[in-house]
Image (cartoon, rainbow, N blue to C red; front, top):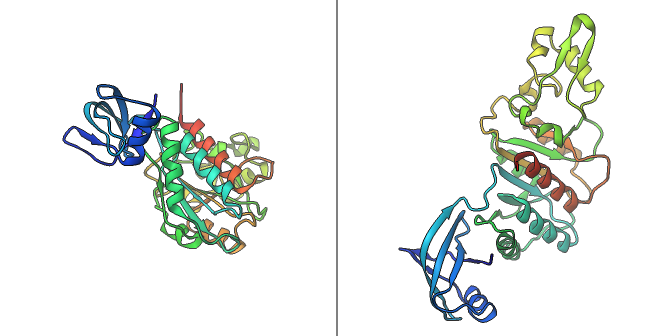
Length: 298
């Protein structure tokens, strides 16, 4: 299936811009009467009959509409610091779009080597990847902001995850946090004080589980999230939208300790993506893939 994009759809009429028209008429050699598929970038696929096959401005008539074409059952914001080599960041943008992301938010950290980003080029990459991956909704590419500003502005009702490399705090495997039963609260602690037994989901360290036992009463522990005590500590007390996720990934030099501390204070959960040391763009694509696989069924 070949998809075309148009932001000029009105009264059952679709008009393609010159670039899309040229691709439709000259490259693919569509003629009047051919059926073509057009997306609006907001989630709807239109089946259309081509009526004016003009490379300067093709026009078509809408036959049917399919809202939610290629949609995924979550809303994911990826806040990722630009890489020094812009090609690597563009690779992330392309692959994240193909897999499934809703907002790509470039953020500038205190240790970022690249401070300037051309978002218009990223939007062109997003459009191409959206069509290639058979989706009708284009991810939003936000204008760059600082890491601190993004942390402060993130919605309270989202699952907010920060990936970073410091060992000064326990980091939960992202696959554990994204488990279906982890939504509200994030998993349950199986604790029986009389037997001295403490257990939790795979990937959660014994040290962290013991921390809960040391800080909560037996009754409280039985109903508390396993990650370090109360839900309030980890920012889940206001999480009302279980499918809204924001993930923050730093630059090559990682977040500064101050940025990481601010994120934790604002309810961001420290997570890790496994034992390997990943480049920024690889970590970002890995995180998108984890969210996708946790939410997509057969």
